[in-house]
Image 1 (tube, rainbow, N blue to C red):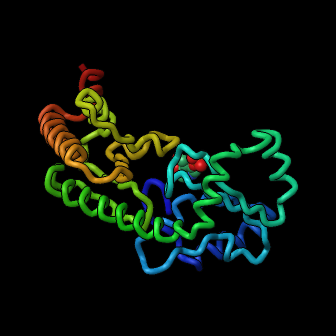
Image 2 (tube, rainbow, N blue to C red):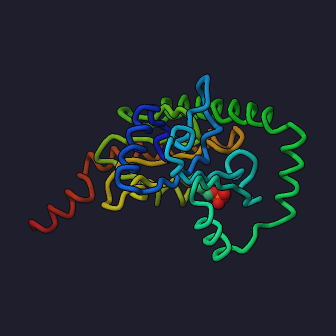
Length: 239
Ligand SMILES: Cc1ncc(COP(=O)(O)O)c(C=O)c1O
């Protein structure tokens, strides 16, 4: 699932990308870390499952489904085994043995599937609650993504609201999010932001969202009254 939009690509489009890459002999490195956190009936097929050329290098990890602290993941290398092994040895020599043994035991116990079902339910519930709260407390005109999987939400704030200004104000109140321009190399998405829904639902999260919504409403009112920072700078430059 795309981060930060939470959307996914159809199998047809994935196949078309694979054909294009095969024509140019370019391997695809697939990061499918959110693939098991799907909200539909079926898990979306990874590129690797659709690749007739065996040219996809598939990567995933337990960081989003069990815990980031284990730092254990895996790679299915397709026909690039030798090169990937060389790079792995060059970078880390070997992974941590104890966390790998603990995870191997958990997997062989058969508990991972039921864990995944619970995790999917939890993330979907969190997302639903977050969306309901956002609808209630954010300024009119705010748009929220409806992710197909994963646990992040993408918000488009009504212009001229700038998420960087909101970020500075929110940090002072102990609320954190990722401003939209982080996802652009050319400072786009200045009125967007990404919220994480990865923590178990708690009154503190609802309170944090309410604070964020109040700050966004106040900033928008002020910016509409005074003009956006860009327009203010323009006015100053004009004298
Ligand atoms: C999209 C994506 N891919 C990969 C990773 C890396 O996961 P790991 O903790 O296994 O290094 C992250 C971690 O935040 C991620 O967000």
